[in-house]
Length: 204
Image 1 (tube, one colour):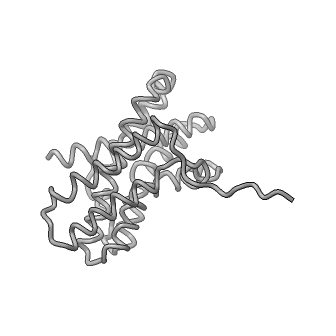
Image 2 (cartoon, rainbow, N blue to C red):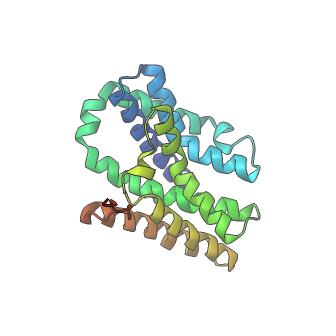
């Protein structure tokens, strides 16, 4: 039950971020709900399709659809107040990132994938929804262009989870440190201004 609650909380936070992008793009309520749902669930959809677990689990449990819709409506009506709590949303997003990375990597590993592809799918679970959100919003995906340390911590923590699973470690012993690595790295990057490397400007 705890894992379900944490999973739904992560989806809600991601969905709010998607809804806020839609609000800033001046989309109507349908656009807000679509971006909220895609951001909250898109990474899991991509992972489940790639590992052949169809239909995706989030489409078989009504709670997984209700949460992003509710989050989208909340952001649609109360977006000024939510944007004032931007710092808190970022913190929850970091915890959602840790949860999704570990859950994605472990699910891929349980379906027979090796540590490397399982780690990649853990990262995809984290960033897939945001990628789809930005493409639908007509902008270059933030995770690919802003220098934010987002995908790199997700990949690192997912790799820890996948390797631990491959070595036969207990799930709890694998999940907790892997999630802590992702969340801790992301929060440190935010607080200290760490950025991903970008190409230098070539002088002619």
